Amino acid sequence: MAARIELTRYRERTAMGKILVLQHHRIETLGTIADALDGAGFSYDCVRTFAGEPVPRDLAGADGLVIMGGPMGVYETDRYPFIRDELALIESALKDEKPILGVCLGSQLLAATLGASVRRGSAKELGWYPVRMSAEAKEDRLLRDAPETFMALHWHGDVFDLPRGAVALASSQMTPLQAFRYGEKAYGFLFHMEVTAEAISAMVREFSDEVREAGADDQRIIAEGERHLPSLSALAARVFSRWAALAATAHG
Image (cartoon, rainbow, N blue to C red; front, side, top):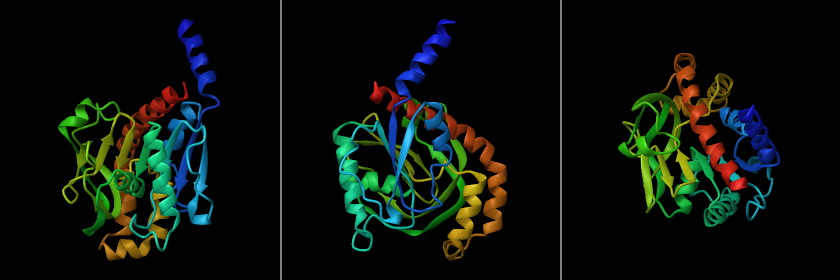
């Protein structure tokens, strides 16, 4: 009974909590991150920069910031002026020590805000490839029980250096830095842990030119997704729920 009462109190405390989400493309949605936020009692406001919605100057009462992926590059500010506003927002969130979760482009934006170089890689990493956890990941609050190696979906052409003061958490054979943590609350994941089967199908349709450019096979990506998604989604549920718990703590 006491545990049930405490859970009820937790939900009441977080019921009014809010997460701000930066969305760069109509199909690159929260995916399973939404499940974690729902489970923690958060609402979330999506700023659809691809539709011209303005980026706030700060989180304005939001308890955390999620930055999703997209086809643009951090360095393409002339073509996508909103990127400058996003970098300023991330800087504000870092200053306020709010939890941040960056996925793919989001991780690149976080790295750039922290002063790291973001640039085109030697080739696109697109498809299902192994991710290897670093030794430091074993002590990380989000990744502490992740397998040493697991399969994840990759969909990026840009790479970045480890920001000064950050901790490297993961790598792949093609990309030395796949995930990092800055401080205790800011995380960047270059690979896609949030995807669903529906999202994968949408990505191979929407970004078919990228699939061909990378020499990948769209049907193979979908088929491998059917095999690897169950274990990846189970890991994602733990990781994103722990990030949501960070934001719940920020909500107080």
